[in-house]
Length: 293
Image (cartoon, one colour):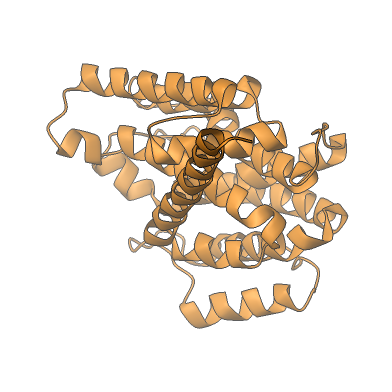
């Protein structure tokens, strides 16, 4: 390897490192709970999952406030989202982006086998937020698949393929578990943010505002999804189980608190000591907590 090629290779390694650091910063600033769960992942998968969630967070911010708060017109917001999707797909194909978060995601996607079949539905759901304010059962399911289930599937690609020379599809039962865990996470967040989504964003994801579905029915669905996902977690690679268990148990706790605080105005949260206890329990290798409706 001549000096110029070696220098270019070293430059790419530095750029990769800076891109991953940028993604880690995004996650640490936006979600302390997620950052905590990530620390429970083994080093093989940890940076990859951060890379996925950093891109998801940036796309979400394009459609959920900061872009508009900067004075960007709605039609331009759509253009920005379209450009972010195009940049992501191009980076996955070629291995480079001038956007550090996109570059980090693309490195993960290329190593772990995350393709357009998962990326495109995600951006389609993000685009839905620009047009659709009220969802029925069918559009809710479509939205949740693109906004959350495919993110779970991206993480599953990491869990099963990180470090391999050739990625392969995960087992079907793990695919089902990843989808149902992602759906549970999303529906919990919809219930937690019900007032904000309705009052500030003018959105009704669940049909609760329109009274087409009851809050109890949503919680029952969440708990069913959490139970189904819990059954597959022990079959994940060992270095990923603790983090997924901690995330599962945190959202199971949120679901229980949402059920106990029916009608409360304040956004339901899990106190930090309880989060720490759940993380400690997962760290010790205990199985996911039983979900009781």
